[in-house]
Length: 150
Image 1 (cartoon, rainbow, N blue to C red):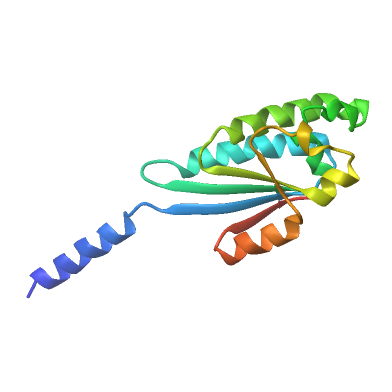
Image 2 (cartoon, helix red, strand yellow):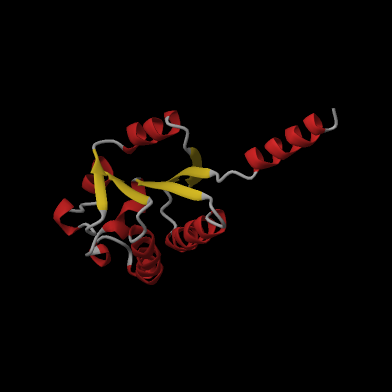
């Protein structure tokens, strides 16, 4: 009879030791270039921390509003001069994220238009959505945890 509790405990430990999949949706609408820079770095650090052992991540970044200039190769034409250094650094971190196979970067078409950014000027890994709110809702419905940068 003592075998059953031992088997149950062993099975429970195996289940809890299974690899986890972390699904996160980082939504950026902030116009604060210094803040955006720090958040892009933090997304990468957070992914590294979650991917310890067998755990995996699936990350989506939706960018809209004043957050979209960093997806442009010519961002210096659309941001204030004082924001260029921080936007450049934010873009550097975004490019690093874009190199990861488990990261999707989506820019809102309406925000691109509002910021006078042509789709031909986007970084190559950036996808364009007609409306990033729709993307955000879709990913939340698929179980992605929403993290906002406002």
